[in-house]
Image 1 (cartoon, rainbow, N blue to C red):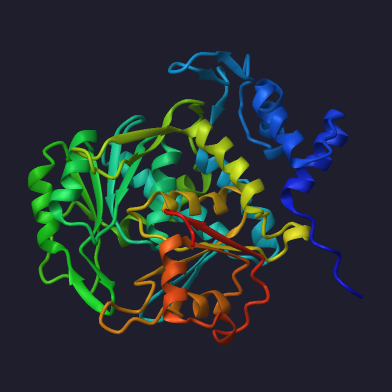
Image 2: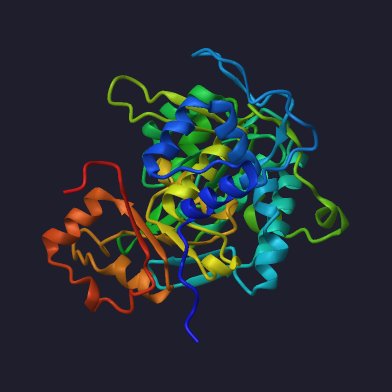
Length: 401
């Protein structure tokens, strides 16, 4: 018996529009035209189709039609972490993990959906105990590992505003960004392993503390790569250790639709990098759109059973935020922490292709420069393992040759 044919996500959305709204479109262009002319109907349909949760109804879709100053979904309350947690039971019942991670030393870890929720609750309560309140900024200096996802969701769950920089960035570059947002807490790793080298970041953390006078507390992720002990208020192991009644009962706070979720930055090519604030509700709707365009579904849904989403990124690039879209849609996120070509000294551009084959990734995204380097290096993807399950390739960052 053959498996049923895969139905693209945007076709499922069009079928829903036909059945639930009586709207039929004979082409993609017609669907697009509707989406940009009937804004209220389109965004309301996306809200309903994605099943975004709010304990209070919104009084309008677009209440103020002006730019800047548009007001979307007034009265609605949302939380990014709520949208992630609504998948926990179904995904876990199907035996599917939330996150699969591998580093360049070949160490593989899996994080289950219930364990993701428990760790997020533990860290959220830890942050509240450190004095973090709704609207406070939490800055992170962390690599692309599961701990970073947990830390972000913990911040979102209590209404703190998240911002992250990658540990390959030096003190000045990080301080230029974080100083502008006046963070209350810093969550940081004291070292990383990148390009087949152990990189000590203990001195950088000491310098950052000195250059960020608003930081009151340091939550430290200890690694084997630090040359010195960094004074800190609590370590990551302790922050995630709680498994008590308060953790079990923890629920993310309901936040206004436009409450800030995170701060990203412009490149800094013209003066200091510019902080860019994204709102909770806007990002959730944007990720609902991304699910249709990426063509990724919930890993436990019959049509997309076993979906595994990977977009190679460091935490210093907005595609790290985009890869989080996987958790919002109930998709297993497969992340890689390391150099995309083994090392600068001994480049091997087949590393990620073999990683994708090993973990049965169905969506493989990377920067255009990565694919260009693969082409220049003469990489033969078919020689990198079983890749027949890869349904989508994603490219961004610059024009693709």
